[in-house]
Length: 504
Image (cartoon, rainbow, N blue to C red; front, side, top):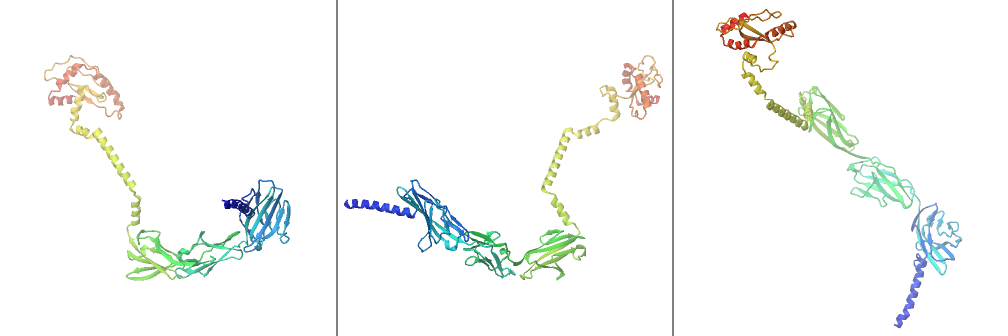
């Protein structure tokens, strides 16, 4: 217990001492004084001025404010640069023209900045009031030269052959300190791979072996803490190919490697392949198991009327004189007398939609015709006409029925009289007034038949129309007795009928 009582005031003293130490070396966590800096690392450019901003604040009354700047390098003791009490500045005579401070502002200006000025700068602020409060901060300063624009060199400058040669790209920079290199291809970083490797500082890019995929726009990006510059774009020369050899034509129908051409057509063939440098092309024709070169160049024109055979085999050969590679493709030309190409185009023009539309229209029209046939039943009308009575009987029936249409009754009616041979009672003797152009007749005879004359020629003989009208008026004045006797006259023999017609 006595030992604990003795140790208690001792431990409190140790705590006060530790607080004072932290007050001097750190940021014054044990007091109300606060010192702050925007960044603990500041990058400067050699030959230019560098400003180190510092902010401090406190909440206790202060009679004196002291600011001190110290400079230290690794493994060396700190050096006094300058200090101030209130508004009075006391510089170190060795650095009085290099460092500047405007109290009560604690910020420091370094002008001009040199490589020897690189290191740690410590600022300490002391406040004198009821007691002494202290706080400090440390700022690391780096000094660099800005980098200049890099230049990329390629070895070999003449280029390299695919899968055979190697290539090295080197980035050269004249100025700049602490340079960092980065290689870009088509604007994207280049990474280490089975064919790509870098030098120790990434200043060189080695490609071994080169391939067609290595073709692109390369550039070198160089940067340091105060600057960054990118080189101009450069494209290495890589020889490759030929790849993807193919033959196309402006006419004819192509099916696989067979071209069909009509007689009389001239067809132009084009041979192409991906290659650098461009290929040299040769056209070879095969006839009767023998081959011979017919032309050099990427195009060949074939006139079908000048070909003796209907089927001819050709070959296009592409050769790259740098890579030493060669490729060839075969095709066949068939000469026909039928426009196969035109037939094929017409067949393609008839789309499935057009076929469906045509079938649909046919079905709709068929259904409409069937509906009309069932509704109006024209076959029954035709059957009735074929199985109907003769026209003379039908006309006589209409004459005496009295129920026909008025249009059917239109015409000229004539009553004919002849001597009575069957003892039929005669009508009283009276004369019918004579009409214009028709003489009067004596009705002391039996009326046999009424003859119906249809005026079919009225339009052709307009002068006879008025005469026929007068005759109709006369005939209308016959009484009903004559019509009743007409029924008996119909039963007379044909001899009387013929004599009646003669009387007419």
